[in-house]
Image (cartoon, rainbow, N blue to C red; front, side):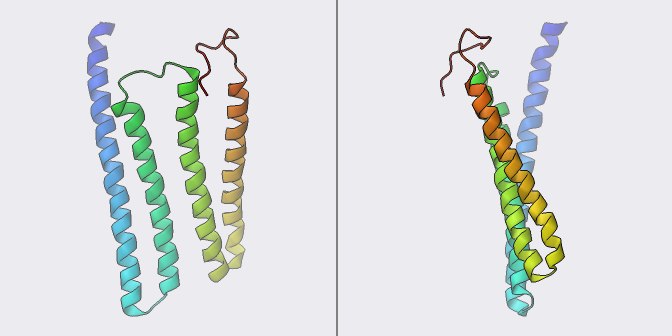
Length: 163
């Protein structure tokens, strides 16, 4: 029974990952279009151009994170026809994904800081908190990479280190 369900599961999961990746890319493109329309409308009406620009940058940053996430899913689940075979491949995959989150969070915090200084300075605390969490995530990623690079072949590692 187990052998009969595996091909079905593989096919259904592959279809899901393809649909999810395409959906994410379409949503990111929609965000890009909305950001452009918002800036064009602000330019046409001469109202709050800087606010519209900052909001558009925020949308573009979220769109960037969505596109990178879609690329990550596509690379890991669609294009790759094998399981992760080594700890170094797993480490590279996790590093790539966390890096996407850190970059997007940092950029969003930066946009929020610019918005807060123009509109309501008291909101800068939230931006600073997001930036702090992004930097803490980056430090944790560095610690994870350092600790996992300490694993040597023959000490419980399933492969030779290639990093």
